[in-house]
Picture (tube, helix red, strand yellow):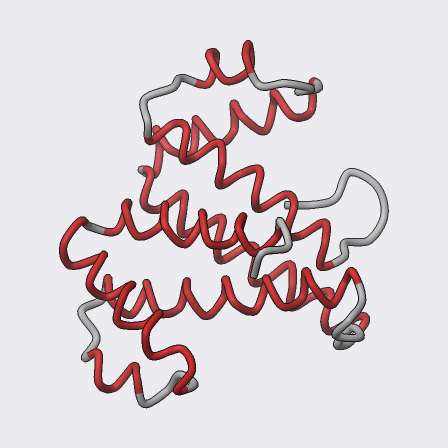
Length: 166
């Protein structure tokens, strides 16, 4: 998820991840890379290449693995920004994206625990009490509809957060 120019920020890490997740969600719905390239508004040549690379990753590694890789890279990208800049002011624009990155990381880690059949009580003991409902919902969704539905849901939650409705 390298930035085309300059250093990453919480905002750039978030926006690139959001775009990747949207492409993966559309592929999950049955769209081809060509359909996306031909129809996504404002897609430039580097963007089209990223769509092709994501489609190739899905073909080579599978959709679940690609969703996981995108979420893991988002966590790494955000960690690098944090190591370079530290925690932003909570009421700042970067503070908003920092919050969303943290929320997504937590949801991703909960989902990975659910996929690995971790004991939910053990996971609940490791998350803030305020996130108990989210933890239970992710475990239930993963158990009832599978990991792809859960990846789709945490992707929607990330985009919801990024749009300022966290």
